[in-house]
Image 1 (tube, rainbow, N blue to C red):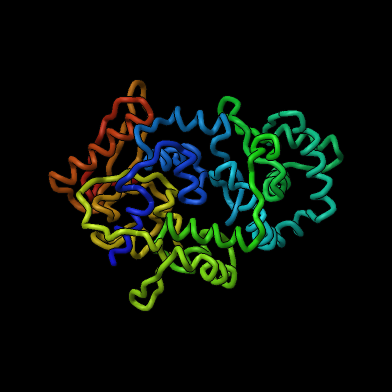
Image 2: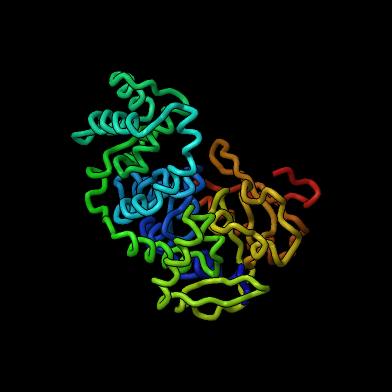
Length: 360
């Protein structure tokens, strides 16, 4: 089984693109989004005729939301899924953060007070920045600056009290989840566990239990229970002693064309797994910090990194391959760069660097 090719297929980077941002996010379960501009491009790569503006509109109107969840870091999630996903995973996040909470003298009583103050400040459809929430907390007698403020607000996110509002210029705002996502569902724990297990291995598979534990923050025991409950929808295959789970309906995947993708930093194809070995097969080994670079895929293999710079009237894309590209590969990479230009609505200047010259 060609693991990387099947992941490429199931992540919808090679076929059957989606029509809306919400469809992408629902398929993958969640999409890491602390790099907001890059995360929008992650969605765009999996959509037909997407633009940065169209995804920004979906974020502004609440079709997709951004919140701290799972590992924890920022993720895009759908309004329908945000509540049950927080209810399933928040306890693990809080357990991992317990030491930091103690160091900053944050306890249950204080979190109750801060959540009440945040709810009061946001009620009635208010949408406030983190700084403005800090002022509201200060008025309630709660010291909230720096990391302490960040943790107080993220705790409100984990409690499914708040989520993203629309951006105000370049600033992010928060809104009450009940007002922003009135359709948010609650599920009983077993149902939520089975659903997240099904989503992950369908959208990211083939993947291991360890991969899902990394992505979700859930315990191995929880994941094994989820696999039992989702057994009718998932199958597995053992490769080199590792058990890989994936959708029972996944079709055979043929060898890919030499199509290229310019993946952003933290794309789910990179960040969605504990191990990156399968992603690296097929060429020169990716740099050790490939997860932290914007990455080039050619025919399903990691082939280099890329960087974009916005200049007056154009976006300059520098391609830094690990090895010299042949003519077909150069054409594929240039086409991928043009697709990015269409996404941001700017003409592209594509520069393919010599392998020894790149510093991306």
